[in-house]
Image (tube, rainbow, N blue to C red):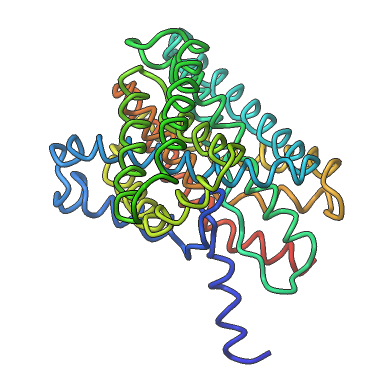
Length: 369
């Protein structure tokens, strides 16, 4: 083994695709969340609470953009790999059930009234826990690694749909959960149709980029105004652009490609800066990490029955790395439920860092086995 090969392995272990369609990004969570904490109000104070309030609009646009990435890539991959999509959905449902169920029981044990806000917190933790970052596959690597990468890619879709319901439950100013999710779907479809009519008729790339940015602003702004999920609205729009006639999805993907990594960095630094330590957040952090690991291992075992050529004991370990979608959804929850949102962001952000560090020990051991 050469020195170059020895150095490449730990870098590859840290390399993640943060969401469907995003290129690999090395160690985004372990670097940028601590950086955000150090720059935020509990650190150097460079990012003040007032700055975080102004970033709220930017975060909403970033959520819609991530949703578009997931919708475009999901519409391309899910029909081509129905069995893996079913496996990823099964794993996601099990992880959500384990984490949300455990969080509900613990909140009741801690004396928190089990009303709608408490249920929304538990469900949010479950949705955040279900998302995984797809590990970057080595060229010519083992089939297990490649299958785990596909499952991790596809398990972002179902949590976003369920998350649209949770946002409706959590937001006191929004309609009830199903109505809020339906509004997000309508916003996504309406915006997608407008974009589809405009993109291919644009006179040049500069004009098309304006149309794309306008659609993103409409997706995020309209969804937020309706009290629904910008992630779900963006995913619906991206899915529509793939199945609609023409090349809208390719045109949008080309214009958004240069925004991929800046958006991930923005969300992670904002999540780090939004961390506010409190007793509930510490309790939720311990529960989140413990039951996310349990949910991933149980969900991975169940999903392996549908995913060929992967050992039941290994798939869950590959799914431990967190995805930026979970952190993005925690920020979305904090926008609509600021009272409990700080504790949720604390638990999910620090839990993501710890899960990423655990991956460095767990995944190499699985690959050696």
